[in-house]
Length: 297
Image (cartoon, rainbow, N blue to C red; front, side, top):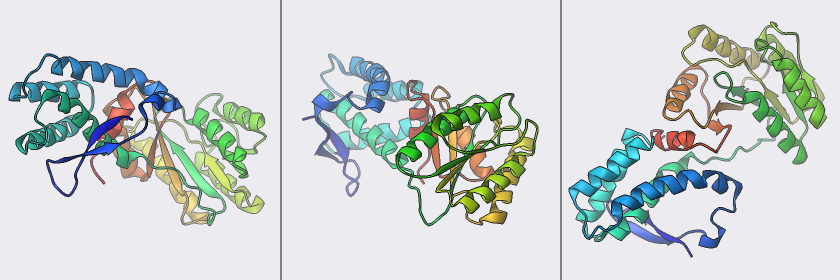
């Protein structure tokens, strides 16, 4: 069984020896397989620092800190990890180099674990409205198609709103996903008012007693204030029909974005608020480390 150290939250600087998943299962999960390259590269860099070390000194800790920062984990997270390692060393919990890597693994786990949240469809809301937001080309429309298929397989009735009326062929792309999954799509022509399309879709979903409504929006850079205002309008218009809508706002971020994902998350949050960031791709390490870099809630 794979065993790594976990922090003792009641006693700062101390770590607990906790049994995690079996080693033979590592890499079998789809997400784990896609993150394997990231895990291997970071592990190799840290392992190289610890190889042939007979003792732990300040130079080693500085090199670990530098490795974490240059791996795009984020300065704040890297400093916190290093400080906790220093505390554990001072308290004689970590006494030899071979204990350092498991301790770093535990620190990373503790930072990213709070970011893992599962989307629960609250059946009290009919429809449960999911608003998709993000910058251009992040994969919002494709993510919608996959979500729609998943919810339909779960036995829920689904409707899509083609709120991206700006990008050429965006409406047709969403209709294609709807046809593929036999799911209704509420749409108007290119150039139509996005807020009006989503308003009509919400009205229709309520009339048909649809379980889940997923609304697409045009891609926009978080620095474009006029487009962010348009997104606020969409939010307000939905509130005229259902004050609690949208019930979930999903920020889709490309996995290669890195620490800039934090800036995107911050700006979208200022505009409309969002409960859960969503990753289009798990292949590249950037967005996973960006999640580690998020400040505590």
